[in-house]
Length: 129
Image (tube, rainbow, N blue to C red; front, top):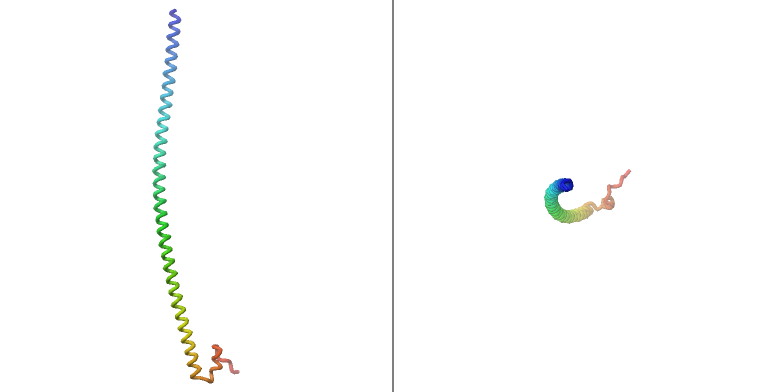
């Protein structure tokens, strides 16, 4: 019986050692998993912060781009208006020059009736060779 008790005690001790080693391994794996989860949480927080920073920068850049686009549209509209005004002024000037030219032509014809045939074509006088 003593042998049986020794054998049972030894088996209990071996089982306890196995249980202790298994428990230590499980605790070590748990701690590693906990540390890994904590590292992932930190990395996730860093990614969230970086994403938020980029999102804000993107919003600011888009707002700036929209503002610049609106300013460009206003500037183009201003240029278009200035161009229309310039064209109207040029048309008036051309019309005034045409009227003045016609008046001068008429005056010249009245002053020199014998040269009217030479200037009627609005070109240089014919060569008399």
